[in-house]
View (tube, one colour):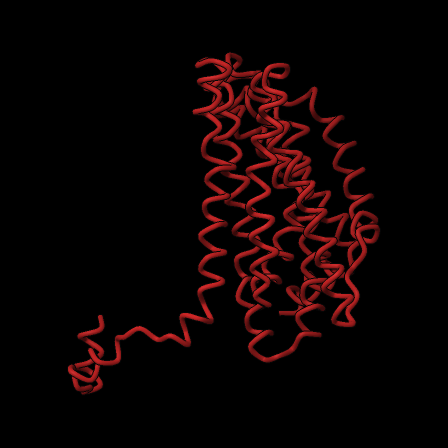
Length: 307
């Protein structure tokens, strides 16, 4: 590709090669973020990827299979959350590039409010209806996986707090704070497992994976609150976020409770498709309710309709 560009624009190939060199100024600017990215990847691996190895040694091979099914479903949730936030990731750097700190803080508040129902409602819905979903997907032999999945999915519950917060801190290059969070997460996770695995068994991993991110999500929000205050900004309150989620969550919980006895508890493709359809409709209804309760979601839907 580089050779093609050199020929197309008639650059001197020698001058092109000379331009490829170490730049100390760029290195000094980027080394902090590079280090933070490396620590983040390492933290991610330690937090997500060693569960089944530890379970095989401390609990047993049968528990690995049961946990593995739930963990496979968790991968879909992780992909969904990543896709949800990825279109907005470049916006943080764009606002910093324009030196618009006020606009950046407003954008963070908008992300906290607008996407919270899109994260919370599907996760709670999957947790509530994990039993018929697991049975129709892999059969009754892995019914215990549904209980594990109902706990595991909550590790992504605080993403509506941690994702906008971490993107904000990356944009303003607060790498030290990010490093602390990324270091604490796997340490706290494995410490909690160490003290509980003897009592809770495989559920120790699911409970720990659900609790630690919630704790860190609250710390992310508090750090964001302090940073906004230093820059004469005001962060959206947790009470307001929870207030906008209250009615949609009630609708979701009521519908899930009413529908659960009538879902398919058979291991076949038709039952799986039926259960996924029912779960999708329940989540969709609750999201539509949240549009009426959440001004940011209402504005988003209104702008989409106008297009």
